[in-house]
Image 1 (cartoon, helix red, strand yellow):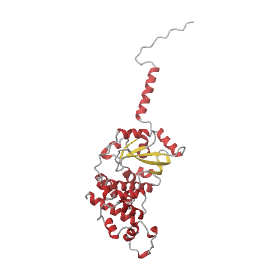
Image 2 (cartoon, one colour):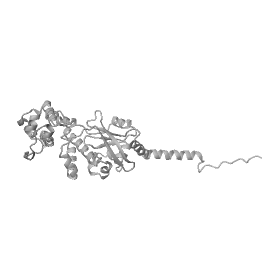
Image 3 (tube, one colour):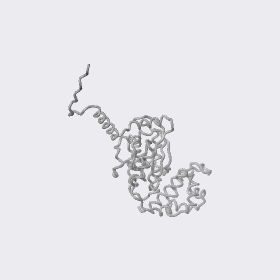
Image 4 (cartoon, helix red, strand yellow):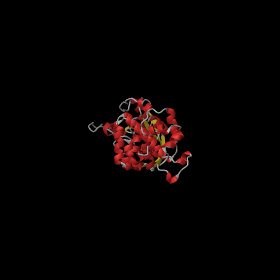
Amino acid sequence: MDETTHGKSLLGEFLSTRRAGLKPADVGLPDYGDRRRVPGLRREELAQLAGVSVAYYIRLEQGLSLNASPQVLDALATALRLDGAERHHLHTLSGDTRQRRRRLPAERVTAAVRQLVDAFGDSPVVVVGRRSDILTWNRAGHALFAGHLAPDSPDQTATRPNTARLVFLDAHTRDLYVDWPRKARDVVGKLRQAVGEYPDDPHLASLIGELTMRSPQFATLWAEHRVRAWDMAEYRMRHPMVGELDVLQHSLPVPRGQGIRLVVTTAAPGSAAQAALQLLNQTLQPAADMSATARSATDLSATARPAADAPARAVPPMRS
């Protein structure tokens, strides 16, 4: 499927599912009950609400018209009661936006990104790419989200962890979220946004196909065409080491990062969750630090006693 056909089908599917999700009463139209033969609004009803011709709207939904004007897209977004993230997604799926896209470079963690991660200190940080691949994390981020995985697993490009795959296919991650269904909806909504931004990414398409085949829950949510913004979300986590904690996950775009984001986890000052994160950090003394501590203790011990091969020094007798 080429870019034009793929983009048109995405736009048509998004309009169709959003239209089906609205009831006439939601937009002030009469409801004829059982006499309605389609779920949600009819095409002509939505066209009337948006102020466009029925024929033109049908062509949009069928993917036969390209390059709808921003004004028409805004009118449709208002008629469909789209939120900010969904409105942006609708514009992203339009022909004009897609034609301006260029080939994106391979994702990599630069020295600047690593400095940015270090600037957050002991706060858990995970760096994710356009497809939700985990590109790197700090020690606290690894311990909070995926302590059951190898610390260097993000460095293995071909098999690095992916947050969407973890949420739907990994038992540890499923247990990590008290309200897993909400986390699952958020993950799918963000992937929907990514597909709109990068419709020709074969690895992203492969990920969607894999999750659709392996997770019925993902397949159901994916068919709803819901979109979520990459911004901030509050979750209750159930960590196997420190118990339950209420946290905020902030998604911050990396400057010049081409879709790369930092996910930083925080807790309210003075809260039990903050104490739990501090406790988690206290258990994370890295092996290098432990080795350094052991070496220091050995050196100190060596200076406090003579070497095994050194001759014993005679002690002069005490004078009376």
